[in-house]
Image (cartoon, rainbow, N blue to C red; front, top):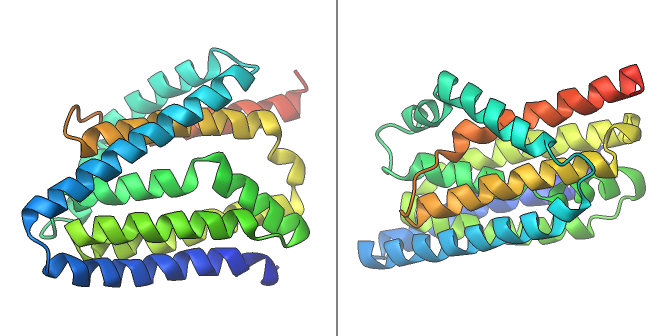
Length: 230
């Protein structure tokens, strides 16, 4: 089991190093360049989200599931006020730190790359996908930390726990991570990543963190489907 976590340790460790490196770079960078970096990352995030939607929406066998998930999940997230709660946890830090943490966590966890990478790590000790994901995380966290400081280090334990849980499930209950399930998660992730990109671009604050409960809907749906055999 410990060997399966090699890619996860690399990813989480890279996030910590990138947070320190980015923070040091940011101290020597004026606000003009920080704004440009965040805008570029927002544009990239929007593109990544759009690409995920373009690839996975045609593969979905449940056309209405992501709609129901987004509507119900966002309503729950808004009721629970998740976005403001996350921002509250970073009070006293950079004004944009909460949004940067949300963006990085969504980018790093909700695509097919980290999910499939965790499955490959658990079943065959192939860490190729997780190493690629770790490289992307390193670049993104360096940029975000340059703008918002060392607080980006908070992402490391979140990413570690997420990947640990996926690897644990893939090790002992591989059937739970079916291709249709990954497809639905990737679609929701695409919407959330695109929403984070728009927020970083300051075009429209869609409060991506409030959308995160939407992930519960496909989990409940596929669990019920497996139990009730419908």
